[in-house]
Image (cartoon, rainbow, N blue to C red):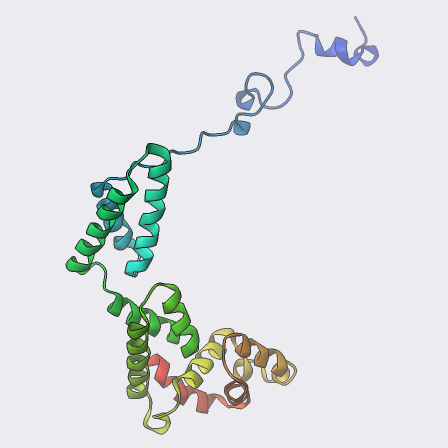
Length: 235
C-alpha cells in the first residue's frame, strides 16, 4: 500500500478516490461559480402612448406625485426609447403631454391637493416653513401654489391650536415637533439635558430654525411645549 503521507499533491489529485473541492452542485464548468455569471442588462421598453398611460396609472396608484415629477419620470422613459429604438422624440413628447392632461382631467394629478397634503405632512415631521416651501419648489410646484399651501397651512395650525397659543408662529410648533421626534431638550433625561444643550441647539439649526426659536424650545418645559404641539397634532 502506498503511504499517502509521502505522495505529492499532484499524485493525490489524480487518485480515483479524490473528491472535488467545494460543493460540486454549485460549481460550473471551468471551476467558476455560477454566481459569477453576469446577467445581460434589461432592455428598456419601447415607448408608445399606451405604455406611457399604463406607466402613469401604475405609478400614481402607488405614489402621490406632482405633474412635474411624473413628467420627469416619463421623459426618462422616452430618452431610453429614443436611444434604443429610434423613437421619434417629438411624437413621444406629444404622447406624454396627452397622458398628463388625461391624468389631470381624471383627478389622478392635482398639484394643489398634492402641495397642501405634503406641506401638512412635513409640518407634522417638524420641518420649518421655509424648508417646506423649498421642498415643494424642488418637486415642481408653482410658486403661487406654494404660497397658497403655506398660507392655508398656517391658518390650519392656528385653528387647531389651544386658545393659549393661538397666533404663535407655526415654525415654533414645528421646532417643538422636531425636538419631540429626536428626543431633544426637555425630552432628554434630566441628568444629561444641560450637557447636550449645545448639541440640541445645533440640531434645530440644521433643520432651518433660527437661534431664538431653538433657544425657546430647548429651554422650555414639557407643559409649555405640549400646548404648542396642539398646532401640529390637530391638523
